[in-house]
Structures are given as structure tokens and as C-alpha cells.
Length: 321
Length: 263
Image (cartoon, rainbow over all chains, first blue to last red; front, top):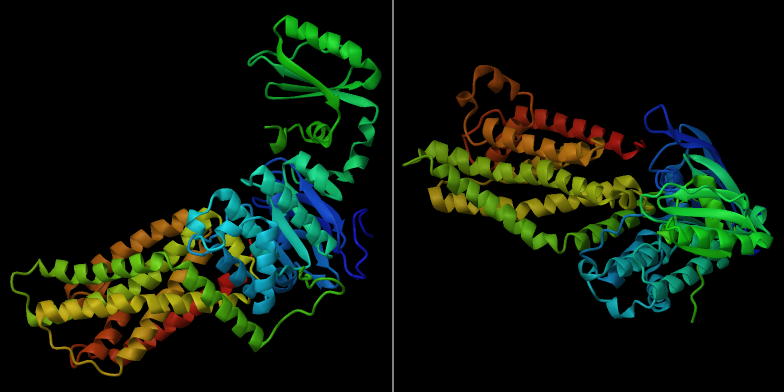
């Protein structure tokens, strides 16, 4: 199968996770029967709150952890049985910063490319191209120790993708990156997909993911609780609006108006879902709450993937904090 | 001009064999050398100060140091600088990687782990040499000891360093929690400097501890190094090589075991 955004590359492989279960303590499962497929050309988002099992899953893919049960395959390669093959075929950007304090940015990218098996001349050419695309040229010869967190993150991305594996695993790639370069980074992530890699993107920034992934899975407490394209996941919310109420700190949840179809409270943020034709009544209700000092402010808007995410996980995503 | 990414189409064959190993070794050696660049001058200075300081500091215990004690101290301090690099500094660096969260990236790289390990060990061994040489020079200058350096110093230093580095490497990778690794290295420093017959003769220790040291690697390390630096100071050099080699093999086994380990 291939995702909606997948490019027909003539590739004959699929990245597949089948019923992967892993427990650290023998009691609770960090990943609990996870199953998913990512095709070449597809950017696949892995969303979930902290501790949901996202990083545990990618560490099992890359051979840092061993599943208690289940299979992870890439074409004919069994990545659990053959972690050497997993490391050759998958590139991994961990959530932590790269250990490049002693490296000039370009050196870090070059040596990483060399380690990944790229020929020196081609690695250098691609390094220059990535530096330009990510707009980090002014730091080309600056030591990692003197780079800001965001630039270091971009250098890390270039290190991982300068000579990439077939599966590119990016764990929170946009952390610390400024909004302008974030856009460049997303362009490059999309480009990796269009060049034929399967990109597995771990994030808890739902709004960014919504714009950039072909498909996504929402994971909570080790289980896959929803999967599909961003628009298919929002299908249930068609014809509905989100009415977001910011409660005064310390206030309890007010009595909900009958027009509220669904709601979730995270901290002082009460997100409700109402029907489109109840918008007027919703505003009247919110203004009444405002007048009575129950809430500080409210906002009415189209439902987003964020709403689906919050409803399913009960957590706010990074993009809403 | 856009450089195409070489990934379209069928999956590549898995890379194996000696040339893949060698490529991985060279690439990781380059990585480790660059990685140590900022730290290297400081590390060497600390090593040098440690070796020299140790030689001079212990000398303060004596008003007039007997020549045999001076010889023990000079050769012992040399041995200790070697052990410290392998068994203490190495694990501390790995623990640091774990604390910073960079350990996972290093372990996810597509090179044979034996190649990455060999690169790490090679570099650790090279780092140890300056401190050792300076400790020896300072000792000769301070105490005027007559060293009779023979070619045997080469295998002695290599085996001592290799065994210490392998043991340190196994300790760093087998112990999951970096905090525990750091604590253990502190205990090791205490035990090696204070209670190992490296700077003084074995007879100075209580009987049971002297006996125990027959089976631990530290006394054999000191003995083989002394065998290469002096004539007639130590007698059981061959036996020490045997014991030390056994420890080297044990450490190699532990390292091999820790390489393939996945939690």
C-alpha cells in the first residue's frame, strides 16, 4: 500500500511494524501491540503525549531496544533479528541534541555522511545544498558549542539526512528551531519523502504535523488509538466548530450548555465542540460566562486535528502550550 | 544543482565484510578525534598534572626517600596514569554521553559496533601516552632513579592499557545507569590509588589483601610495567603477563557481550 502523498518510486518495499510490544518493568507496556505501515515516499506522523511510547517504538526500530514480541520489517529485512541492517537502512535523529560541540557544522555533516557510507565528494555536494536549503550558511564553520539550540538541531537534521537510509526517523525535529527555519526544515522533510524515503516523524506538535504529514497515528499509553490522513481523522468533526474557553485559574468547570457536543479540559483550557448551526448560541453562552467572570476569554474556530488529538488523548499538544 | 538522494528503488544489500569494517573504523576514528578536539588539550594537561602531581605528592611523605621506594613510586605512578585513562576516564566519558542523551545517536550509527569500539579504544590508548611519559620524566628528575628501559615496555604498556580500557568500556556499557558508572569509577580510584600494591611493595599490605591482589589485574599491570622499566626490581613478570592476559580476555568477552546487548 502507499499513502496518499506517496510518490510512485518503483520501490518494492514497505516499512512495517506488527504487534510490537515492549515492557521495561514486566508490568506496563511502553508499546502495546503497535501495528503500522509506512510506504516509500510517505511522511508518517507519530503523535502522542510524553510517555505515550513514541520514542520507545523508534528505539526498537533502530535496534536500541528489543521488542518483547512482534515484528519490525523493511522489505525482506527483519529489523529486530538484524539490528545491523536496521542501522544501515534507517537514519535516526534523536530527541536529544547531537554531540557536536567540538565539530564545525560542516565537519559534523561530512563525518556523519561518511559514517553513513556516502562517498566524500557527493556528501560534500549534498552538505552544501542542505546548508543552503536550511539557511544555516553563516554557521558553516562555527563550532557546535557556539551554536544555538535551533541551529544545532538543523545541523543534526542535515547529519542524519545528508546520506539517508530508506527510513528516516525524526524525533521532534523542529524543537528549538525558529519559525522561519522551521518552514525550511519542513520543506526538507517533505523533500525526503518525495525523493522516496519513508519518513517516520515523532512529534507532539499536532498543528505542524497536520500540515506536513501524509498520514499519522495517534499513540497513547503505548496503544495506537487512531490512524489515518489528517482530514480523515477530522471527519467526525465535520459540521462542527471548536469553542475554546480559557477559565480563570482555579475555577471549576462550569455547567455545560446543552449545545456542547463534546468537551475536554486540560489545565484551565476548556475545549468544547459545538455544531456549526449552534455558533450564535455558543457565543451567547460564552459571553455570559465571560460576564460572570467564569472565563477570561473565549475563541470560536474551525475544528482542527488538535481537537481530535485532545479528545483522544486528554492532553494538550506542544503547539497549544 | 540538486543532488539526487540515492534511495529510490529497491533496498540496497546489507554491507558486510572487512572493507565495510575498515571504513567504519576510519570514520569513527575521525569522529572520535574531532569529538575530543576541544577536550583533548585539557585532558592531556590533567593527565600530565595527575602523573607529575602523584609522583611529587607521594614523595612528600618521605624526608629522604629510599631508592627502592623511589623506584616503586616512579614506576607505580606511571602505571596508575595508564589505568586511570582506561578504567576511569573512558567510562566517565561514556557516562557523560548517556547523561546528555547522545549515547543513543552514537549507537544508532550504521557501522559495525566492533569497529566503533576499536576506534574508541585506539584513541583512549593514544591519550594515555603523554601523561605516562611525563610522570616517568618527572619521577626520574625528582628522585634521580636509574631506569633501565627495555623493549619489554612496549608490550607491557599496550597490554596494561588495553586491559584497563576494555574493562572500563565493559563497565561503562554494561551498567545501564550512568550515575552508577560514575560512582563506581570513584570507588575504583580510591581502591587503586590507596589499596593496590602499585606504588608500594605487595608485602606492605595485610596478608589477605596481598593474596587477593594475586588475582586482580592491578598488581600484574604494575609488575609488567616495572619489568619494562627496571632490571631486577620484580621477578614474577611472566606470571603477571599470564594473569593480565587472562583479564584482557575476560574484559574482551564482557565488551563483546555488551556490544550486541539490547535492553
